[in-house]
Amino acid sequence: MNDLLQVGVITSPHGLKGEVKVFPMTDDVQQFKKFKKVILDTGKEQLALEIGGVKFFKNLVILKFKGIDDINDVEQYRQKSLLIKREQSTPLKENEYFIADLIGLQVFTEEGKEFGVLNDVMQTGANDVYIVDTKEHGEVLIPAIKDCVLKVDIKAQRIDIHLMPGLI
Image (cartoon, rainbow, N blue to C red; front, side, top):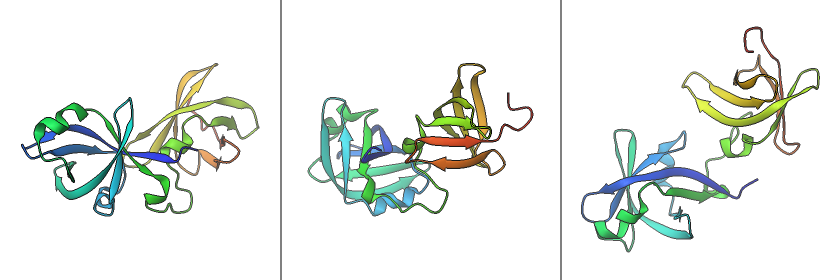
């Protein structure tokens, strides 16, 4: 389990005073107001940045970092990830999981047969869809609903599913 969770990606500078537009990668964008610090992953290093201001514009979050007051200082951070420590995140409800914790889990059928590996999670609005890579069927889309996903065990690195007719 990774101690850092991705909450957004910087898309571009906003204005001339060092603000950035962030595409949020969280269900609750309002939690950006609660963050005091984020970690910027530059690809080469991770920089702790203190948040000085938060605004919302359409589907984006506008962040101002303390000590960064010029567009030239943030231009280099386009397409870089913003991370938080796991303990900063909003507590999960029962049967909720961080996508980062699900990716890579082994997927088994209800009969106990190994089916594949969860490769990604597609968020559709109605329900999430698990993208499972299988040897036998290629990529299979499994709706993350009670009828299909029987059990998720993060510690055991395992998901048990029921294959409804028509999924393969």
